Length: 435
Image (cartoon, rainbow, N blue to C red):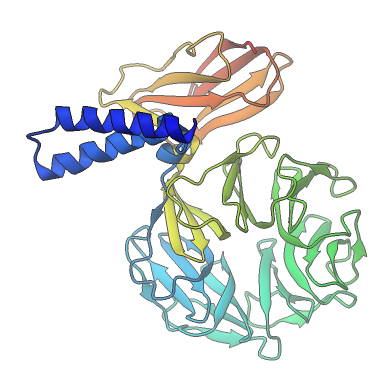
């Protein structure tokens, strides 16, 4: 829309607002005015429905330093590491925070494992707590600059800024260096039989692999960029880089595929229930529902565009940013919307509408109060060959009627199927994408 068109729409909407709300109370006036402004911004193209639906909310009450670099979940608690002010903890889903006794240093990375919380710092080595942050014990005093963690469940690996990769086999009590030809480690990923690390200095730039537990490292085909993040989802490995976006490998790192994120500076990759999140520097947050094939920005409500770290606790996703801690409902991010307060009597999967559609369709389904149902509700899309296209829902849902929107931008015309599974219930319907 042109500027002139925007002014015309705004003036008309404003006149309509004044005519309809002359005698309105102040509180209702503000609400209605906000709705009027939102309607005009939507009409003008300066605001999208995505901005409204995926609402991130700042949740930093008690975090005295807004420069939050790391975030991690441990049971019902959330830990946030800051630049220069140590670690804060929340026990109420981020509504309030208190500073732990580790109240100094820059905490670049956090790990929750085996009842302990580990904090890697830049300049003050590594700390771990066995009592949810009430007290901390310092380890690796001679190593300054811990950048990342990875674990196989019993062993913990810590990447450092200059001292390579360190290993602990006793829950963090003792550490020793295991890498002899690699110094600058920015990310690390453990896999059965093979490990990967991302280098971040000119001498160690790129992605390296080891088959001997991290003693010797060999360069991979990704040898031209800093690798800031490594993650896996099933057999697929993701590598987040500082200049080439996100790449993935399905053959244990022998070859790599470039995703739709091609130029973004990736700061973190986080996988939860099959959903893949990618945080970036100055490009916001992206979400993939089909294991990295397609990505959607999810930045509604964010006042910052740089994401340092991502985590999830139950139904909420949390972001560590240079503007504090942000929180959003996973249902909002996925576009799952309850559409009725009436609890259905039986399971149901409705035909998508419109059908045929282009490019988006809505799918509605019913979840009754079934005492025999256990586990998650799954809504998965398939192409005509039976290949999984996207996982739209993979969550524990309360009884109710829900609606979700599927945007097929980037997919070819054709017949698709969507299947709902909840407990013993299963239903499949056909949909037609016609471009």
